[in-house]
Length: 461
Image (cartoon, rainbow, N blue to C red; front, side, top):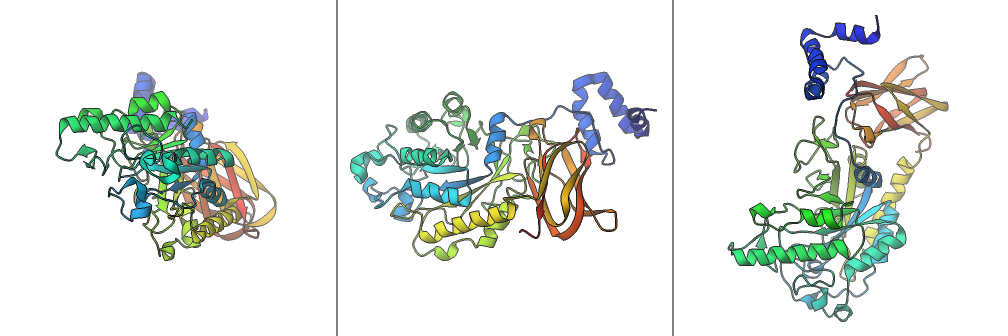
């Protein structure tokens, strides 16, 4: 008897009925078949199913893993995020966008996202959208363009650029969440929508390709009275990853803690989903965790160095974001000089150094296909952690797994277990001396394909 025949005969009646329905109904029964497998954890290997998969741009964005968020604008000088101040209030004395991206590089960030327009409405470039921008400011004789300087610095250091521009709040226009002009006057709402579309068109056509477009909170759609932003994205930045809006290709973890719950799946059931996602989701919507370097402070304020997150807190965030199948976006807040303060720069550098020390070098690694993959070590060694990566071009297939070590007792000893893997899962455990490692996928949807199965040498960490 073939193994497939034995597997069919061993199924319970309800499961067998689903199997026969799959054969009879073809692709229309794929969802039922998936549910059967979700309910049958004893089955290790399942047929290849139609499931959500990432686009090439989503896979490339996940490889970036760590980013630097930069909040700098009118609120840096006023101390208030939602107030309108005279344009000449913005007067940085020593602005240096190269220094910002040097902080990103020291931290190990591969992308950076600049706040080009926050809720006060002040535009950090030469804009024709409305008269509240650097064009109306005496700084650099009214010719300053912070977005252009930021993009140039990113190109100089090989960091992928992104831009944040909110639409749901604008104090200059007296616009309230979720993007409605106070009082609801139709003509003024239409004028605001037109100005918003102009400012976004400027940002998305003047500065080249963007790695990420960041909307904060809701983007009101046209049928609810908002601007028509999705066609602009599709026309001008088709390769950018998008946070929020109907064009969203990524989701936020929620909570602004730099961490995501576990398990964290790359799939979700709704475009506006946040948090850990859902294994049966039909949308490929990977997660990004954001957090300020200074606890709960997005813009710089004097005397707040004590709010800098401790190094061990930042490392914990990394493990609970990048190590849980999400990207991590850490905010830096330049001061009124236009420079990231020394204490913050030092914390970025120490964080990057510690991440490289802990996770920058693995002792052994391999690729593999199948429900069980064994990692041979060059010698018996003390290991204290593993990194797992699926080949997500085929979707996320692992639902549960266990990692085992070959010990002196000539047995496979369980070292750790988990559920989601996705782009990356970093898992640490008490040091143990082993001669080899084995990954067993105990519950899957389709045949797993591992981009990497690697371990860390405890004696080098």
